[in-house]
Amino acid sequence: MKQRIFTLLLFAFAGLTACRKNDDNQPDIKQYDDAQIQTYMSANGLTGFTKDETQIADGATGIYYKIINPGNPSTGPDSLKYSDKISIVYTLKSMDGKYVATDTILNHFDDYLGHFVNSSYPQGLQLAIHDLLKYPGGSMRVLVPSRLAYGVRGFGVGSVTSSGRIAGNQSLDYYVHVIKDQAQYDDESINKYFAANSLSGYTKDPLGYYYKINTQGTGTIGDIGDYSNVELTYVGSMLNGTEFDNAAKTTATTMTPFGTIDGFKDVLTKHCTTGTSISVFIPSAIGYGRFQYSAIPPNSVLHFEMQITSVTQP
Image 1 (cartoon, helix red, strand yellow):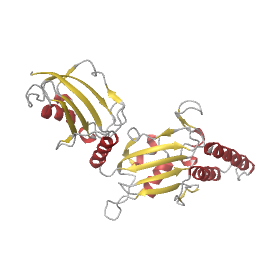
Image 2 (cartoon, helix red, strand yellow):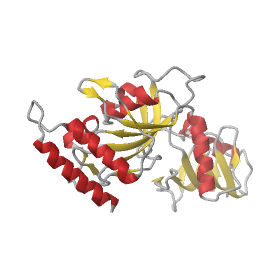
Image 3 (cartoon, helix red, strand yellow):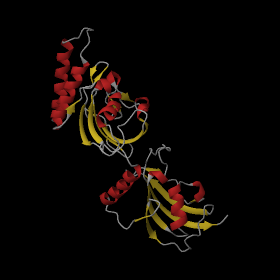
Image 4 (cartoon, one colour):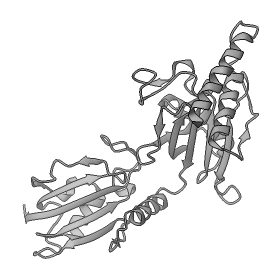
């Protein structure tokens, strides 16, 4: 019912603005965006937002924002600069309710803040992070007007009714968190995953990953070296459950630890032998780090379930 009322109000406002032209005989998009955002806030019971009056080329930005966590400007680093490399997680909804992306496991950005718009993110979100959120470790909710989002063309593929496309003239609702300490963030994410899924019995290795031996092996720990031939079945997934590597889920494959990511190699050489069945959660620093790898976003925690079939030496 709220969505229907919201849509009807927007159509009504569009009809009014069509009759009220500016000097260029065009509808006033700033007024349209502001009405769209205010109607959205009212329909969704959003309160405590501030309207940004920062002046840009065509006037005030018209961004509405609410700081959830300001970071720690009193003792932290200087405010964010466009030359700073940042890591963020975010959620996104279009105000017509047709586009929703709330998976913070997939929604990662890691690059220079100045490259934000070049990476297909809206100018309005870049301005909000730089001018309003300001500090690493901070988080905010920000409502970006369509003229500072994807404009009349929208974004994505498919028709305007497609769930994979943001329609034209859509203002956007973002939650964004600028990560200050990636290792701490990863550790918190792993422990939240444990709590949410009622998992227990994991041990934190000094290198930073968590492991649980489900079945003890029959060999001797230490038999696996960097160049040992390890035959195993395994599956790799992210914390949202998406499997990125299940080719060896049922059919054993052979690998040498030296050719794997640091966390995976350390697990094999320190905790595994023939017959070991083990579950492990690897933070991004000893996974694929700040780089996108295939379908794995930057700064991703990796989850592996593996069973060692045999170990032979070169």
